[in-house]
Image 1 (spheres, one colour):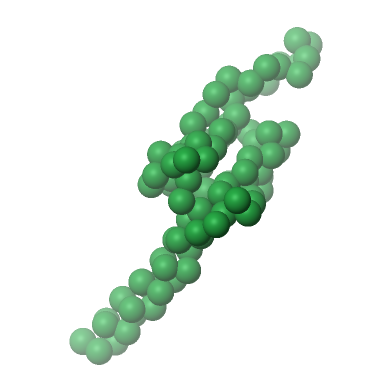
Image 2: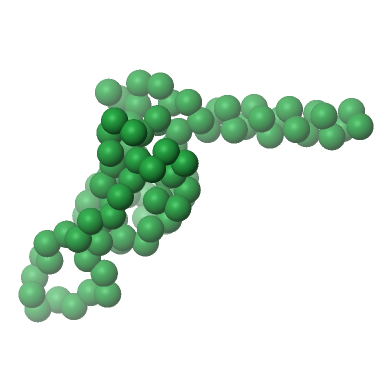
Length: 95
């Protein structure tokens, strides 16, 4: 029983370290974003939406021209989107 309590406490501390980035907000580098939707899936605060970006060239065919956009007022700075992004397009910036 003590082991389970200890493990639960460690998990809670890890979540606390991930959550609660007061004073920071997520930022998306559009050129790195591939529109994969991973960030919107993990965002508990609904602070990320995908939008259709303008195509760089009409001659280049891509499967998706979606890009992630942060809703700053809703972002709590938890960093879950940063951890989920496969292309490192999302970073945290100071407010």
